[in-house]
Length: 595
Image 1 (cartoon, one colour):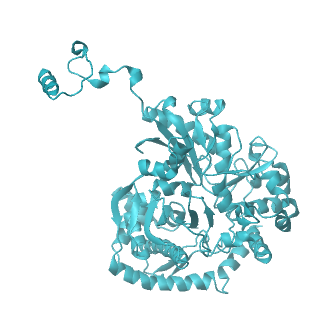
Image 2: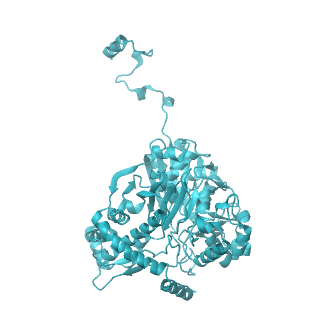
Image 3: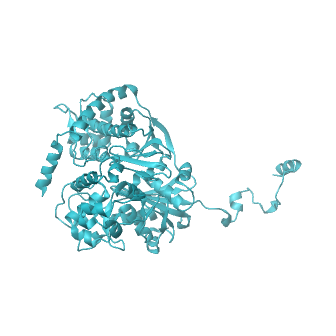
């Protein structure tokens, strides 16, 4: 120490006045400072409400390090057969949820993740949420869901209609027919068709089938906005869900707007003034401050009262900046039970079958495009749960593997086209580009020697072909796609699947570093809402990253997949665009028999 000081003095370096006698041995700067001089790290929380569960992640706002995660499985899951406490069978294609499960996610995951990370409430500077969409529910003027009321608890229309609630397809058909007839702008914004999965299809279904629920509801609201209402005590709606799901499009008149009362009246007389009476014309951009955590929710979650809460977001849209994507030319696939395809562009294009194009709908300054597939992981799970023989389950148990792993390993040993099997990925309808929930799955080429893993591989390939169909819809309109980024549960678990996607799409695929990209994206938007970062681009530069591993197309495999894709396209157009209506005829017969 003395030698070092002598050298510094000889060099005439500036030295602060230090009393060396009070410096402890060995010297420790951290120990020598007073506690109030050490600034603790700051964190944001993101909560992702998925199809089967909700998860919270707590993130260092400076580094993007995820220091804790907690997951809560919805006790009621997806309600498809009967309502809780009721024996009456629900109609086909129903998919409901219990909003109490969403509140329990906040109650359970936030305290748990803070305990695991050993983070105090004072260190949390903001919270953001994201949700599946369109996920809609009717509520009282104070935000209380109608499903909480015993008077309406046995009426399915009083419950949350999940994104994959498809029984509103007849209403979607009506909306599309009248929209085309009246030349409505939303038809072009949604790529030629409005989906049964979206807000006004579900709303029209409610007013048609349960007018008493429509009349009793003071508001109809996306779950993405409802959960923010629960946190802050203030109704705040985001422009993202309104733009992509609820016909809030541009241009209507002189700017963004919902359809006119005249058009809504043609759908149903009760809907004429629905926007002013039961929705909200005030919409907030992503990354906007919605309010602060209420005292009641502070007790429930362990957060401090007044902690900043960001406006709601859609899960897929929140994931885009969490994959480091903040500019055009990069397609983001959020892959789970379904897949959402997100893309940025500097200009607006009308693309067949897109789920919408909204200015600032994903990243400020860009038009945000959305497309998607209604079933991906759900298809693989359906096959494993309902079609795979017991022998495969025995093999999985013997090897200590999941059934998915056993099928994947066997499928990976085959070459493209070796099985002679080809499938259409419409087991949950087609979201893009045909936008038709009445289309169904198809497997061609099976014979008495076909093995379970061969069909499993064909189903994976079918979903990859569906993604290529979406990519071509965009690129044929001049929308640039150079790279693909993937995130979600499927890329995490199945490298074989990702290689097939690279081979089929003939583009490199990068994976997000985070295992919870939707929740991370929600947390990043919370950092913006709290004022820590000025823009989501700034947050992405600090908090988001991708892995080093890249899935590169195999030229030999891609050449074979081009041939298979041509055959897929023939089936796609024959059953999806042609006059053959066998799929729809069978589905209509099923509806009639169930009634």
